[in-house]
Length: 123
Image (cartoon, rainbow, N blue to C red; front, side, top):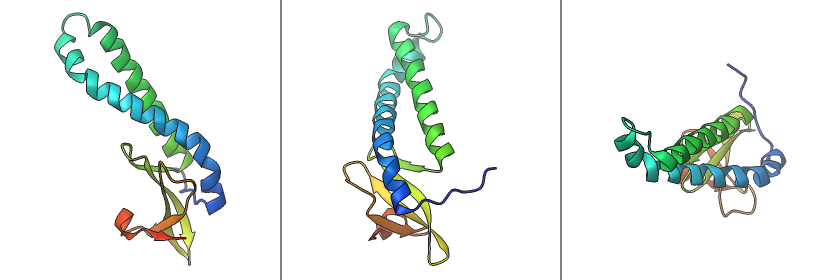
């Protein structure tokens, strides 16, 4: 297992342009999977769902690739619907999370590991 990466505020902010694009793909792929799942399930024994099945498989590939890329970068995806992510960081000698979600201009909040989003505080 790789060592945990810790982000500075500047490093987390630098990830945001690519993160916005990646989260858009994740959300779109997730919506396709949810929309297509029943069609694919019903058609699995016959033709695999045709075009809907192909879209479903592609969405699964995209979702897996993007979620794995986030994990490899050390970014924690908390909620794909709201685009909530955490960046592990260090503060006063302990592990905390820099907290960001889609719609925010920059990383401007943090929380302790045991408090989550409810414990968000401004930087």
